[in-house]
Structure formats: structure tokens, C-alpha cells
Amino acid sequence: MNRPDEQPADLAGYLAILSRRKWPVLLAVVLVPLAAVLFSLRQEAQYRATSEVLLEYQNLGGAVSGIQDFSTVLQDATRVAETQARVARAPVLAAQVLRKARVENRSPRDLLDASDVTVETGADVLEFHVTDHDPRVAQRLATEDERRRSR
Image 1 (cartoon, one colour):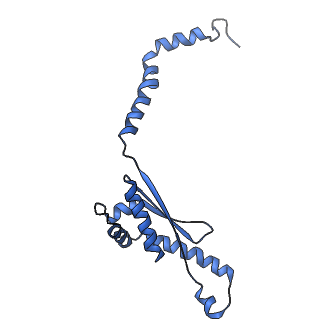
Image 2: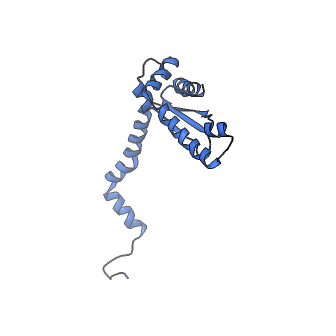
Image 3: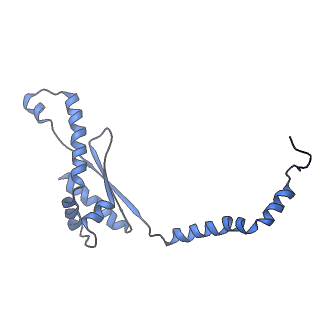
């Protein structure tokens, strides 16, 4: 309930408040979006390239004995994929990728910081993702990883 000395809010009341507080409102409505646009225009574009690698493996125990235990194969497949993803992140391999892709202005640490390797759930596939400000470099690095891993 309204007390007798309180007036119900109306449009004129809101406009009076806005006119008294015009500078903070203008700052919030104009300067903040303008600063955000200027900041985003100054940022360097980033491109992301992705490649997929099919992992091939065989269950050596099953091949020798002729017995296939599918639960073991599935557990081993997950373990193999996770191991391969970790190995793919080794600095020595990153240096090889940079050399073979002919990218000379990056260190192995730079490549590792700008990339990641994920295991595709439910498949024997590794996904290589590389982010770079040059789309051609991102693509070369991602596909060189793919060529290296598929050998």
C-alpha cells in the first residue's frame, strides 16, 4: 500500500530522475559500448583449424590366441586413445611439427599453448585443434599433426 505522502511512480517521475542522473546514464549507455567496440577492433583475429586422425591398433593378445574379449578391446581402445593424445602433446613432437610445417617463428611451447588434442568419445579418433592469427599457419600446423600421427 502507498502511504499518503508517497506518490505512485509515473513516466514524468522516471524522466525527472533520468534528467538528474544524465551523466552516469550517458556513460553507461554510450561510453561503455564504445570502449568495448574499440577494444574488440584492436584485437588480432584468431583462426582455428581442426584435423582428425584415425587411430589404428590391434589387440595382440586376441590376434595370437584367436579369442576376442570385446570388453578388454574397448578398455584398451580408450586407454590407447588417451595415451596417444598425451604423447601428441610432447614438446619433441611439437618441434617436429613446426619443422615439417616450415613454421620458424614459433617455439614448441608456443605451439603447445595454441593447440590441444582431444579424444573423440566413442570413436578411435584424435582431434587436433590449432589456433593462430594466420589461417594458413593454423591449417598447416593442424594437418602436419595429422600427417605425423597417421604414419
